[in-house]
Each structure stands twice: as C-alpha cells, then as structure tokens.
Image (cartoon, rainbow, N blue to C red; front, side):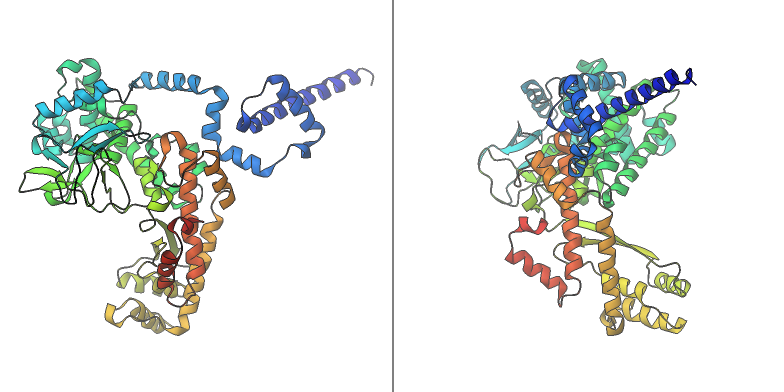
Length: 535
C-alpha cells in the first residue's frame, strides 16, 4: 500500500499539470482580444480560473473570440511574423507578393503600355483610392452620357486572342476548355513569363498592375467559411465556388502534363487567376455575351446605385463606358457590377458595400422542400413538374418585395388534399395561366404560416446573435457610409452580410400576414431611413 502512495501522488501532480496547461491555453485564447499578456500573467489568470471557473467565464466573450479568430490570430503571433510566413508560403507556391503594389512606377508603366497598344486619351486617370486599391477618377467634369472610357478591340483579352497567342493553345483546343479556363491559363502564363523575363513579356505591365489578393472566397480557409458564414445561404455557395475552381485547377494541371511550359502552371497561380477573373472579367452583352478582360476599364470600382455598365459599342468598335451621373474633376467614377447582394459581392469581389447603398439589391435565399411524408407527395410532385417546377425551390427574399410565386408555392406545399383531383385543381389555380391564377382563401393562411415558419427556421441556423454581429462591426470600427474590404476586415464584412440577411428574414416573417404585404415594405422604405432597415 505504501508503495502506491507516491505513484498516486505523481499521477495527481501530472493531472494537475495538464489542467494548468489547458487553463493557460484557454486563458491565452480569451486574452487575445486585449493583446498578448506576459506568460506570468497568463499563468496567474489560469490558476485563478482553476480555483474559481465562474470568475472568468463569459459566454459573450467566448463567442466574440470564436468569431474574431481569423483577425485575432494575427495580433497573437504578430502581424509582421504572419506576413513573413505568408510571403514564404506564397513564394514556395509560385506567387511572389509585390512590396509596393500601388507604386507610381507600376501605374506609369501600365499607362505607357496601354498608350503604346493603341489606347486613346481618356477622360479618367488611374489613382490609388484607398482600401479598394486602384480606381479611375475624372480628369475633368463629366456629365451623364459623356464618354468616360474608350478601349479599342486590340486591347481586349478574349478567348480568340488567347487561342492566337498562348503557348497552351493546342491543349485548350484539344481539351475544349471553357473560355473562362482559357483566360485563367493565359493570366498564369503571362504571370510566369513576367517573373522569368519581364522585358520580353508583352503583358508584363498589365500583370504587374493586378492585385496579389482580392479578398474573395477563393482566398478564404475552410475554417473561415464555416465560422463566418454559418447558417447563411452564402456558406453553401462558397463551398460550391471553391469546389468548382478546385475541379477546374486539377483538370488544367492534368491537361498540361508533358507540355514544355507545364511548370508555369501551379495550383496557387491558377487559384490566383480564377480569383482575379471573379472580380475583373466582363461579359460583353452587345458582343454575344463574350467574356473579356479589359485593361484599364477593369480598374473601375462598383457602386450599387449606379445603373450603367461597361459594354461593347459597335459603332465605335470599342468598349465604352458612359456614366449615368455628373462627376467633378478628381472624383472617382463608378460602374455597376450588376444588381448583386452584399453576400454575392463579398464572395465574388471581396467587399461589402456600405449599409445605406444597397437596399434594393439585398437578398437572402429561402428554400422550400416538399414534405416527403405528405400522403400526396407523389401527385404533388407530378403536378409541380407539369407546371415547370420542382419539389424543392429557392426564392430570393428582398427588403422591398416578395418574390413572384412565393406565396403560391408555399400554399401548394402546405395544404393537405383529400384526393388526386384536389391536387390538380389547386395546382391549376396557383400555377396555371397568369391571368387566371388565384390563391384560394382556404389555403392562403396555411401557406403564409409555412413561409413564416421557414423564416424562423432560417434565422435559427445563424451562429451567434444580431447583438454579436453589431459588436463585431464596432470592434472593427466599421463606418456605415464606407465599404468593408474582406482583405483586412473579413469578419466584419461577414457580420454585415449576416445582419442584412437576418433583417430581410425578420421583415418577411413579420410582414407576411399584413394586408398588401409587398406595399407594406415599400411604405417602410419611404418612411424610415434606409440604414435602419438593417436594424
């Protein structure tokens, strides 16, 4: 018995030591929000925590720690060390970060190259405009309809140009690669040539002007997606975008094996290229929806309330942009990237627009699925198919209107028929010819009940609370009138998306039973300042 006592004591000491280490680590994580304390302070705090766990437990603080992990990790190891590690990893993967990405030399070389390639004098000039990077500002006062930008066909980078100039053209043709993939490979090819011999690379000035990072979802880690987009429909879309690009990258790498310049291609470089295409490629509507990279014009930044786009002008035989408003000399000129929600802009372009600027295009998807336990699920599925619908359907909810067909679809899923004939009768009432559609009063309420319940369910899937998301914006000192850039405020950008999506779900939930529900939100928009709609 006596020989067992020291062993028991030793085990007890070992357990105590393990508990102390765990407590130290937990306390260090909690303290990241307030900077990195000395190890002596950490140990003292940990011992206090072991003796009185309730003393330091704070659920809200723990939640903030989890949500702020991507940014707080930076302050814990030191921004400089983290950048050095990232730079080393990038270099090993074939990407070399520019020391001064917005240097005057890069700008002047780009302008000279564009002029040598045939770009005429422009009414805008390139400048560094802050967190968004490059932008184009007016060289003189501009009126609506003035020609702000004019880029000749010779400067467009299209599939035709890629197939005519790329060293990988034969591979692209043989494998019948999509034009999006061709453009990505062309960017990587010219990036590699710029690194090897910039003097002999035609596109070197353009390549050097491109950003190293965009902040879009291709640059996010899986942990960031699961932490920051949990519960949002954007989470599923983010994983799908990453999966699609990963599949494309692997196919390209497999396709170029054996090519003398195969070493140009790497997974990191191709991800960089696809990331750039997400944020810069333009589909020219007036030129058979052709995809193109348009040097100079791709420096234009987005503003949600702008209504004009970059497009091909057949008469001018150039890409032309004409603004829809007046600009003063020195004022940044903006373009529209299309009617995109904040979530879409974050994943694709790497930023979230200011709170007050995007109410008309904000949306959140709400998905409905036919109940498989419904005794008439089979007949209902057949009826939906007859009218071009599926047994699951996603509707984009917005602040100022209900999606067309939302109430009708919900009513059809929710009602409990007594015969196959009743299924067909209500299907015709709800989905038949537009002039004859009507929502019968006897199923209207149960359909709206379903919408309300699905809004509750969607809200319950979000991580944290509205208060936590607001706290996040305060932590990062987000200003309502400014865009939030994912590159340096990713957690805050995601919090803004969550706040806006939840606001739409709450307002849909609360308005669905009001008479003239769509008009109710229209009136709300007129009565209350736009920024308050996201409260």
